Length: 254
Image 1 (tube, one colour):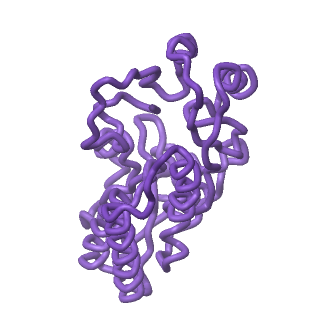
Image 2 (image 1 turned 90 degrees about the vertical axis):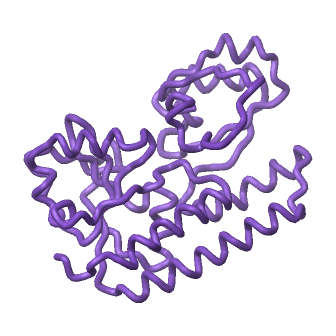
């Protein structure tokens, strides 16, 4: 996992008893501990920009080879749509014995489809709304490139107007702004990376220039489920939350 089990949003509500944890820090996996488990198969996610598996994006080559030396590695490729990735996950899931026709799965799929339709309707009712997706740290404000995040790409395809920053050529998921330049982009709504809970938001609020963003001053700030949505239930929940926020956001704030 890319962060500690207590902070990882993908693990909320899951029973982890009896499961061995081999990493709780981004880019750090205990290869020896994984090998000791003697798995028959490793299921991961491949990130083409880094040519690496989840958590090992910055450790290509030797680190990724170490996984395949332990067991065959399968999984889906990180793409431009979470909805499509969930469908992709159905292939290995079914081959490993999942019943994709189970009533609970069908019900959650239907709920997700309803959430998407509601999201499209709410977004269409605010045609002038602009959104800025950010990941604040103590040192910098990272502005997300929508095409680099599968859920943001989904939102855009469903009509949401997310501001396009100027990506850093060496790290094309983001444009990195110093806090002195935090107000470079203005939007009606700001959504922040929630992978570490509200820590990023707390760090932003400690910066005087954060308040120079019009949406911040108006209180138009909510979470962005960044890079962790991988099932219908969580996605439907997050879409409904965002729809609720958009319904009450002033589309003419800037």
